[in-house]
Length: 374
Image (cartoon, rainbow, N blue to C red; front, side):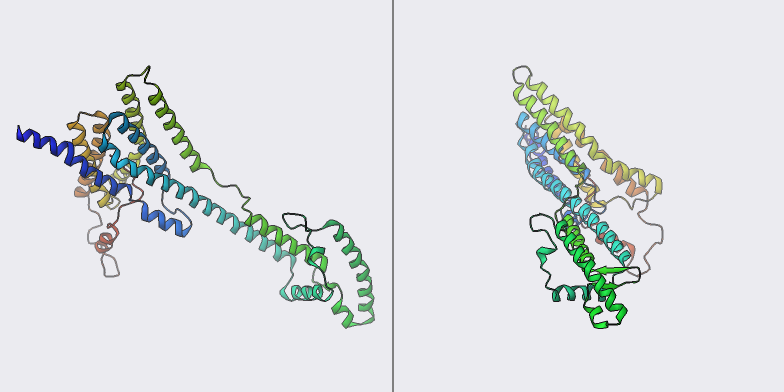
């Protein structure tokens, strides 16, 4: 009797507590990589799509823990829910920052190319600015004060054009008579392909102001793929939770558990893409170097603990996903034992050895391999 009680304590209390620890380690695996991506402004090789299903997975298991009154199921998934929300927020932010940065780079390059076509060198710009200062041109004569984005005042532009036309004739006469001083102080500047006037310079300044305004106003649309996925998975689980919460009158307790249990296990299908792809790569390349050893060991341990707990409490919805996760971890372990991680005799040319580099690389969990929390 004592042995049976000890057996129950180990399976129903010790194993799930250890499973909570391993699940917590696995849930924080992407944390450092996401912080690095946030600093760099792009996701790089990180795949943010599994984080959407991680959010749905956490919501589903929390709902299942409420229905089954299982605190051990709730423990690892409550922080997992908060972490998945943070991961998806970071993914949306980083994707927009990267997109907006690319848009700015493209717009700046286009503006520089357009400016190069004007063939206006720095000395000519300095001469125009000096002329504007000498003639006491007010800024409100160039930029319309009532607009949100700087645009050229059309009425005053026409007036300036008239003035410039009259000044052009004077300047031309001075040029014919050889009066070089008057020519330098005029509003007309010779150019290889034509003339550059103060009005043209003002128009160029306004073009730049409008360009900068459009960029800093962030009018470019952001990619909406990831947030649509997040909204979709949240809407799905909101509908399911609403159904089981308000369906007590026409749904039995077992039926409600069945609905949530089946849906959360269907959600887990998307988590098995990473380990299955690793197995396929190993079989194709005959090398196990693509398998991340700490993630593989943690996946195997976590799945085995929760699989044993599911058997102890006779819960098929805990047994199935974690048994499958443990099986995938076991297959990866066998592949690591069967296929070498590196070509025979393969050491790096720098003398440190490729094995040392791999040891340093495997001290942290791989962020791309999403796994179940329980």
